Length: 169
Image (tube, rainbow, N blue to C red; front, side, top):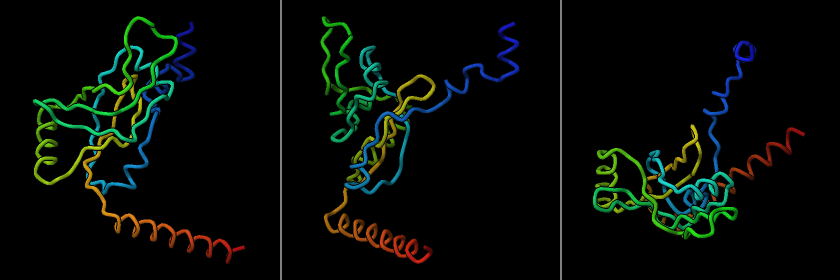
């Protein structure tokens, strides 16, 4: 009888399971790098780490990814230790974490980062279908004058929007 009520209302929990929960965004990456392409990768975490991720205790600011021996590893991503967790298991906040991608994708990313001087930067961390996923960007570092030019363009568009709003009032 309860299943019939669920079927009529359409709330079987699938929509909740398929929802994407964004945990962390690396805004500094958009400022410091020119984003060329993005790729989604799975993230290998321990039990207490995934609980901290779900709580939003993650920093992506200084993180980067690197291919080593045919595997892709994420360095310097800070996940705060889960407080109610087991006190006997050591929790290291900045340990290397393995990224899950297909072999061909890893080889292509490794080739791009070696030959063209590009780097792999995490852009956002999210939970989709009860799994931690990270969006990596193939990025090229901006020069100082590029950053200044981008800031000037942003300021110009803000001024134009302010003028349009003031005029329509």
